[in-house]
Length: 331
Image: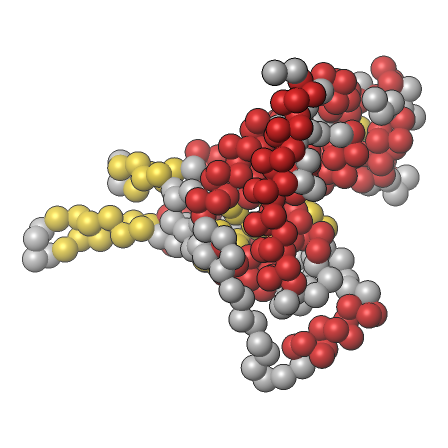
């Protein structure tokens, strides 16, 4: 079978499989207004087995979006409110002594679910953050010397509040790197806000969501995402974008002296997986450069660390990534 025939056959399979996800988005859209980008990124995370860091002011339906998504997939959902007095055991679980049997029994914590919303992750101390990040990375938890696998699919969506920094423990850059995507959630438009008022302006708003998918559908879709066709030119483009965050001069990108640390190879893998998932949601069996451009900002914005000079000039990592996307030639 030629490459062209393989791509055509793959596209047919993807069209059929991705229709479930379109139904899921339609179902969630009955409740959520104007957060299409957040929903899309959550599906990207689910399909590419990566976690999300969501930044936005309170009241933008971040929690509601995750809760609705879990109902639509008919899967487990846990919301964890991070506080300064939280302990790692409150998250992962602990051993409880039973006097009757004189034995210790493992009591699993709320992390043993499918969709985890870690609300205000930067409010918890470092040891709690590291316990969560270990679970995210290893997809397993050790309690009293015994290791337990976390259920699949397993997706952590951690929220950060950008306005209130008192009493917070900012996530170290090395830990932020564990998140595949960092999504910035903005305010709705005026028309969207009017719709929200119509839909939610009662003491008991209707947030009934029908389950249109099962967790097994996610697992099956991931196998298709893995088989997606990525042309060598697109692979080279992804590598060029990431290398340009470390060596901008090689590509003639005018950001010399603005980057302290560039993105690691983890970013290269993350962009590739996210681009494949994006193509899947579009019903295509192959990745195009636009898939890469669409997701590059969310993958790179928290991985590119700017210098003090850049901060003095008012330049952010987003400005730097935008310039890189402008200057690196697209295949």
